Each structure stands twice: as structure tokens, then as C-alpha cells.
Length: 376
Image (cartoon, rainbow, N blue to C red; front, side, top):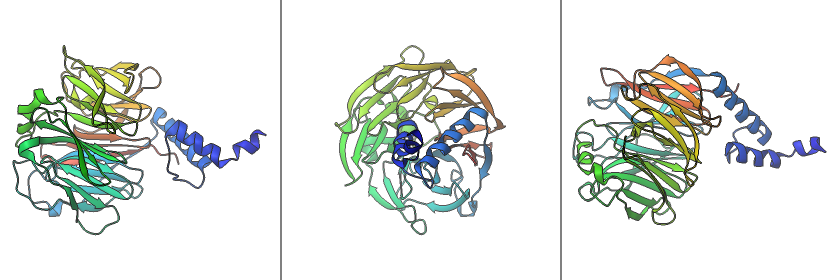
């Protein structure tokens, strides 16, 4: 009986969705998919990975900030890297080759970094990215050349700077700083229309929002999608969870008025988010209930620049060029540090197979590191 049931591909599909949140088949059968995901998760536990640096031709760069990476995003097939001059470079994960460079159409600048990429939404067929002036650009993954289409033209004077941008299957969402009462913008990405503008999360950072357009500043806010159509945003003093389907209604809030939060230590997965106070105390909480999943401590976080991210099972924190890993499903147990040292981190991202980091040197040129934990 069990042998007959175990051969049911539908059963393995249900298990893959339930355990690994997989809805897209990447292998011959759903049984193969489940086994592959299980083995890959084991590789994260045992520090079994392949490390490479990703290369691209910088000969088309003519500005000093053009090689500074500002954000990274992963899909099953690609890594997208957004740079300070508005350029997005696309890398194929299996071949680890740079396959395409995307650029926004020319436009007047409102400051040195007004065209910097503030966020990327990527699937295996389409890439959407936004710049700090509020513009949103769309490109087909399999398109030709650097052409992009501007889906939305930002209004920087009335909205401020777009400090982070993300999205899901139905919505795009942006976090703005500079104009009180306009922190969140939500767009229906099917018809590319704005559905909501409002929120006070970034009101305390309004002045600093304008500074982000002209100078390198500390990160004012991070914004992530969690659980499909829920967004979680973090600033120095507060974390806000909003419902994208219901006009940005606030679902939950998490304040840290005494010590403040390290914004670059915040990230979220489908169910939970990690937040870190200024002393390096990290807490993983469920998005909707605020239930504490686990806690851990990042040593010397107050003296070093910390940048972190999470996947479904692990938290990754980089400080002082050292990347450390915690198991968030087992009480925040510390596992290990990566063998490679990466320098000063500018951007970081992880999914259930890869971890990527963009780090910079004194020349402000970013090096993109990729760790592949995929099962052989």
C-alpha cells in the first residue's frame, strides 16, 4: 500500500508545496523535486557549497558610481544586481555568466543617486526594477539588448525618495521617505495602476530621505513580501506589517523605541521576519501573530556594519567581512561561518539554494559573491 502511495506524483507535489513552498517543478518528477530540496537543505546545515565570484564586462561604465551594487534579487534561474547608476545586470545561475544588462531610459536627475536602483522584482520571465526617483521599469527576461519599458513615472517632489521596492504576483509596493504621510505606495502590477498611497512609517526619516538622493547614507528602510500578499517594512524605530489586498491596512506593528533597530539586519521569508536591535540582539517573529520563533545574538554588531537576510530555514548575518549562519527552526542555533571573507557588504540575498553578496573595496567597485548549496 505504502509503495503505491509513494509512487503518486501528486502526493510528492503536495509535500513539496507544504514543506518547501514549491509550486514550480524544476526536476523530472515531484518526487525528484522533494528529494533535491531536502538534500539542499541538508547542505545548508553541513556547510556544503560551491563559492564563485560573478564577472561582467565593465567597459561600458563611464561614471564613478556605476560599479557600486545597491541591491540583489534571486529567482530559480537568475540573479539580478542593481547598481547606483540605474543599471541592472542579470546573471544565469547555472552557467554563472552575465547574460544581459538593462538600463532605464534617460531622464533628468534630482541628485547623484536619484537613478540608483532601489529594488528589483524578478521571475523567470520578467524583471521589474525601480529607481530612487520613483520610476518603475519593466523588461522581458528573454528580450534583446538593454531596452526597458517605463511602467510608472515617479513624482519625487510630492513623494520623496523611493528607498526600497519589492513585489509579488499581483502587487508592487514601494517604501518612500521624504514627504510625511506617503510612506507606502501600492500598485496593481497587472494594470500598472496605483491602488494606495499613505502611511507614516518613514515620517521620522523625512529629512534624511532627501539626503539619500545626493549622498551615501545609512539605510533608512527595508521592505519585504511575506506570505504572498503581505508586506513587512522596517525602519530604525518600527516594523509595520500591511495587507496589500486591503488598501495597506496595518496588520501588526513591532516597535523598538529604546535601543533602535539595525535596518540592514532586517529581512523576511514567507512566514517570519528577523529584526535586530542596536546591540546585536536578533529576534525571529511570525509576521501575522508576532509570536517569537527564536532569538540569537550577533557579536560586536554595534561596532561593525551588519547586513543580513533569511531563507526558509536559516538566518545569514555578515559583520566585519565574516558571514555567519543560524538555524531559525532549531531555536536560533549557531551553525558556522562561511570560509570566505567578503569585505564591506553592500547588498545580500538568499533563497533555498543560493546566497549572494555584493561587497565593495576602497575603489567602490562591487564584487558579487555567490554560494551554491544545490544538491549534486
